[in-house]
Length: 333
Image (cartoon, rainbow, N blue to C red; front, side, top):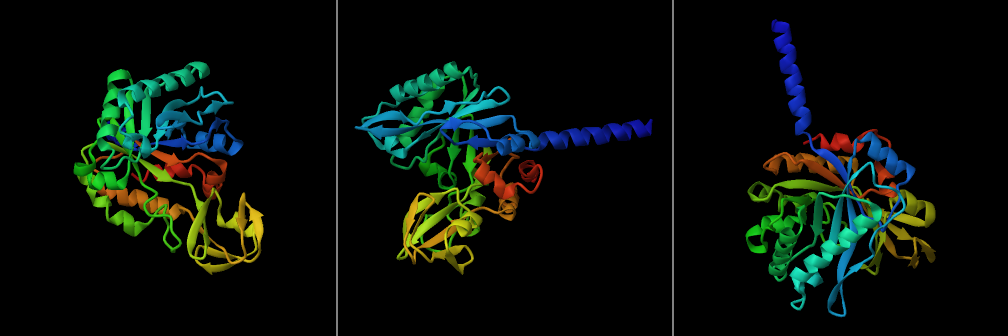
């Protein structure tokens, strides 16, 4: 009898520990939904069942908010639960002439049209907006209008500064937030990594314990090149890594992640002059594990989901030599 009691206790412990682990999900941030072979493999091996999908952006045109670049579907979404994500430029919330109640109606109408055409049923909508002190009243009113009109869960992305200074910036009336644990610094010509900087994160991380909204966590798996000329940033080269740069452009290593271009050349859709520099910014496996460890020490509760930004073959190849990598990172909580 004691054997059976012991076995039952072990099973209960295993059951509780597995249910406490966050679910692994991904952001999908392209204008066409069509999964590549590597994307399908990663989703399957990491047990991913939910995609946070950018449906469209909202920006100002002639002083009026309009949807831009709505997503098109070439693959069926049947295997996945879809959460539409709407990226709203802060300029929209800063514009006093914008009627946020009308904007909420238009947002939901556009989401509904996309869902109807593609036979998608949803339970949640996520709003992505880096609101500020000047735009917070408009943004909070917009969120309230969405909640009143949508029989859906509403979530919002939350930046580190909005967590540390939440009494000033406000807390949106949503079901839960998603901590965006990336894009921490200014894109600059110095040697710092604007995607993830441990020292910058340290200025904000302890504030997590006081934030009144339950939070999931978004982690970065993207990278880019910062194009520098005469010590000034002149552009970003998206989704490029060191290997691609060295295989395409003749360069000289100047420091850990900085390369000087040795020729005039057009590459990656960019014109480089001899003497230009490219700073590669990315997030390593060790960085991701360190992020999880740091957040775990400061977050009040275990997040229900870890959402990786973003699902793209170019990004995935940087971590592809380890099976179930994303699920393993998520399990660190």
